[in-house]
Image 1 (cartoon, rainbow, N blue to C red):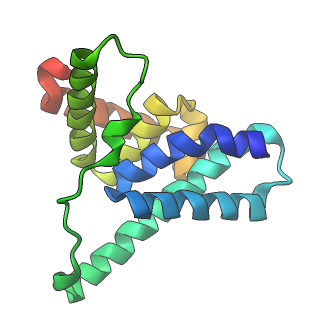
Image 2 (image 1 turned 180 degrees about the horizontal axis):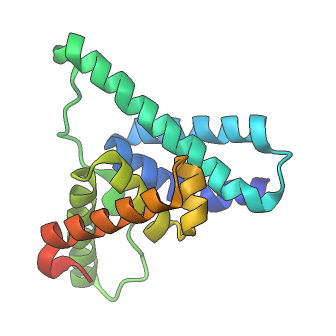
Image 3 (image 1 turned 90 degrees about the vertical axis):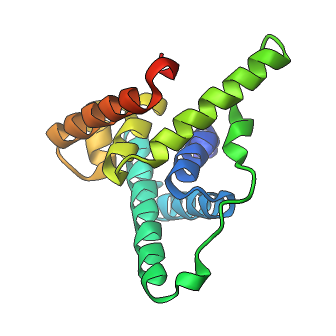
Length: 171
C-alpha cells in the first residue's frame, strides 16, 4: 500500500493542482483522498486501486468546486487571489540540457496548465487521467464514474480544445 501511495502522490498532486489552482488546497485534497482510499479500499485487489483512488480524487475536486461556487455566490469578498507564483512550474523534468531549455519547459508547461484550467471539469479530468496518468478508457470511466463512451467524448473534446488554444506549442 505504501509503495502504491508513493507512486501516485506526485501525479495526484498535479491533477489536484490543475483542478484547484491552489497549492494548499491541492495538497489537502490529495491527502484527504489517500486517507479515504486507505480507509475504504485497502482490502480491494491491487489492480483495482488506481481507478478507485482517482475516483476519490475526482470526487474530492468536484466537491471542492461545489463548495467554492457556493461560497462565491454568498461571499464574493472571500475570493482567492491568483497573485502567488504557481508551484506547478517547478514540477518540470529536471534532467534539462541547460537554463534555456528549462525556461522553455517552464513556459510550455505553464501554457499547458493555463489551457487545462480553461477546460470544463469533465474534459480536464478525462485528459489528466488518460494522458498524464495513462489510465485505460475503462479505468478512467471507473475513476470518473461514467461510461467509456463519455470518457472518449470528453477526452476527444479536451484534445481538440487544447490544440485550438496551444497551437504551435502543442506537440
